[in-house]
Image 1 (cartoon, helix red, strand yellow):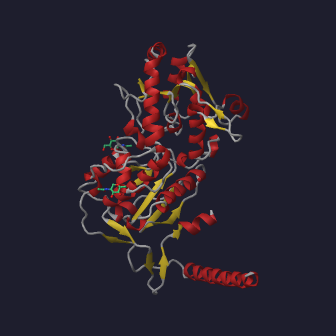
Image 2 (tube, protein in one colour):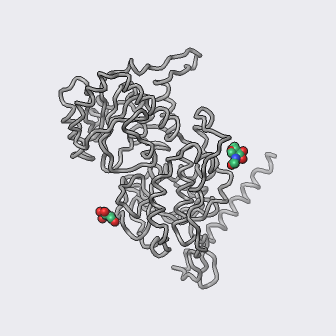
Image 3 (tube, rainbow, N blue to C red):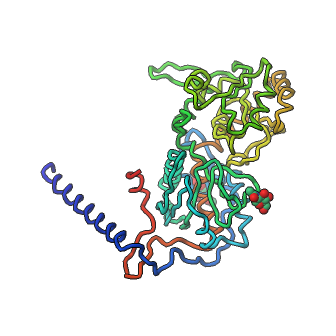
Length: 436
Ligand SMILES: *[C@@H]1O[C@H](CO)[C@@H](O)[C@H](O)[C@H]1NC(C)=O
Ligand SMILES: *[C@@H]1O[C@H](CO)[C@@H](O)[C@H](O)[C@H]1NC(C)=O
């Protein structure tokens, strides 16, 4: 075996050399004029068929078993997360009669922070990867998440083929442009934007937040207890034992109108632990940073939008605590499961200017059983259902399906130049990720 290795390596090197030669030839011929089109028109499609699904009585989602399963079937996803695709349904409805054409798709330029790709029979290709001056980890996190949702799904070859563009900025520029774009968050009025899961489902190193499943484990350890390495059990923190305070740590700069109002409303109240972090000041971070899981040691968690959505929201909703948020303008997929009143309430909504915050805080402190019920509903709805890694991957694949149904074209992976050469339009993600 050993003696054969060098010759294998030699063959592999030889193959690489010829691959480079081929690449050089293609690039070397100047800009090849293309003969064939970059897409084909699809037969007129019926409305997205999945919306008629009525559930599968013989299977139910069990978070301990299924929560980290990235490969649930389409039916299982629908059974487990009936509200998860609300934003996709809204986007689909806008384009039910007037599908996106390739020309419209192609009209959106791939500016800084954007990625253009193809999914061809379940395989991911990168067509264009713009400079990422501030969002390189987001772009790679998102591509890895999408890739995971595809590779975990045994039937991925049956997914429709698409060409797509996404932005890794906080929001999409030109949200009403003629070409569709995927983004982490959107407002109801952003008609060309399709919602995708945010980078935090992979990891968010800039604010020292690790892999999502790891954060979830640390959060659940605080609320439910955990076995230590030596076999001793550290019990969880009961809701009524948590600090009876509203906690918030964040930057004011990203959204002064909303966040300054939170500070003002909380000022001088003994129930408030609200502090500003200057992310550019190391000392400030050291003194004021609260690891995300330690937020769960407080009974009440304030949530405020930043430049658009606040990436922290989904971690807070993983806690057995009461999230208190102003009325939200920027949507994320799991928002469809938010309930602010009645016995199923799973968070508390306050005015956008936080004027009613003191009154609502006093009510919750005086009625701890109400607060605890809201916290338990949040765990059941979000931590153990809509915010599981399983839900994230279900959402990705449904995005692929519904976006495909809204496009009248299917991408072609190879284009042929005038001199008969076939040229790949994208780099397979499997090799792309080794080079970036
Ligand atoms: C329901 O789900 C189970 C388990 O995934 C599967 O075996 C069964 O075929 C499904 N039934 C229907 C009617 O889809
Ligand atoms: C996009 O269009 C909607 C209505 O079609 C409008 O309400 C909204 O203000 C527009 N957004 C921008 C950023 O122009």
